Length: 428
Ligand code: AMP
Ligand code: GLY
Image (tube, rainbow, N blue to C red; front, side, top):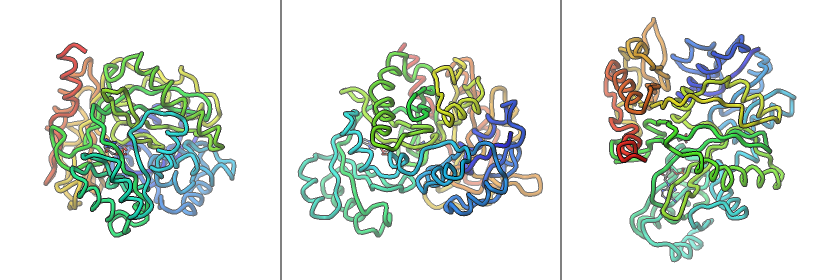
């Protein structure tokens, strides 16, 4: 069968790589894809911001299934458009994707369904902000309501900073419409984890848990990024915690969305903070995480297409995924300057050597290919991902491979999975 993947990052490369292993996939397209994805799928041009362009593309290619990688087409309603035409597509509808596209929707939904989350206040104006500021103590979190490509969350160290940040967002000068409503939140402390489940609108099956590394520098210093690396091991959450998260977070979300008339199908990404008061939801995403998907799919032994079809056809079950016990680690190699301004077009050396390290797959996030060479084309360039017999082994393989890659200005974190290694040493 023909399968179409929408997107162009490391997550989409991992999806394409895994789908290629499915015996039933005869033809794979990726729109628009990147230089590395082009080795595994046929890349076709597409404008992910335009539903018309995506409908035209799918009517031309006629895929048996379409998988949507990033949030933007989902929040614009690509699933609604495809469903209306009877085309099988994986992901939530526009109404269901509000769990990611509107933070105030997500917070109010969690309150209605008693899902544990930080105390919050929604502000539509400067006046409402003044009142809300009285309810919180610094540090406090200021969030733009809409999608802001990772720039919509600020942890303010003082009330003044919170006020300034929130007023800037409300003025529309920094984030446009995404900031016309602001959510103030209590600041939670603890370890973060990414808990993803697949659903068909009714049933839920969890994927293996992972941890992201959002800050740009080692020891979680510097500004937030899309994610500088991730790892997945069975130690991240034990069976008891996994069941707790399904019962107290994932299932209430799926049941609640269905009850409210917006059944949620696809991947639900629950960003969790493990606080002293128990696990609490930081955010929902309506899609696979990037870079979490890279190590998660390295551990998947069963057929990804089967699980995707189970979601589309309404027959998700716990048996849809079979996982290797081996941990996996993804180290993101980024362009100089990222997450700020960066230059593209740098020649990348050593990708083939890195790919030859045992247990390693180099996923491309921002590359293009010209005359047989790869060049940088984005902030996050590569996701060097390794599977190993244990976490230290996976970490060693990933960094062995990283050392073989060179491009002007490159930087990466040296401490991906350090928290997991520390827990191992502490014996928990
Ligand atoms: P979000 O876009 O809501 O996921 O926020 C991005 C990142 O900001 C999260 O991964 C956390 O690291 C941080 N964050 C969000 N909300 C909170 C909170 N209430 N307390 C502490 N950190 C937070
Ligand atoms: N890695 C965080 C995200 O995908 O949103």
